[in-house]
Length: 82
Image (cartoon, rainbow, N blue to C red):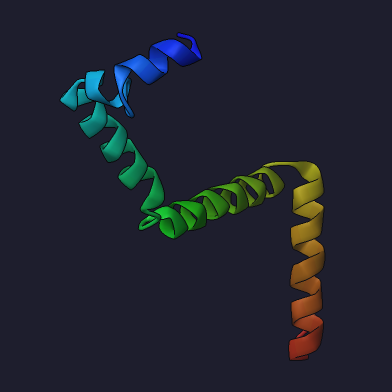
């Protein structure tokens, strides 16, 4: 479409031809992506899953066992029962 075609078609040539369902879909997508409710909860769950995976990996490996033993020793030393 050139400038003459646009000028001859009126001030909003494309908007008049967009089906209402496309406009409704576009508006729904814009509103959904703008709404951030629940996003923080999803981020917290993601962080918790990563932390749980790291802790599980540490507990199930030999280096993890050594780290756990050392931390237990430190806690016993602080508590005075070591």
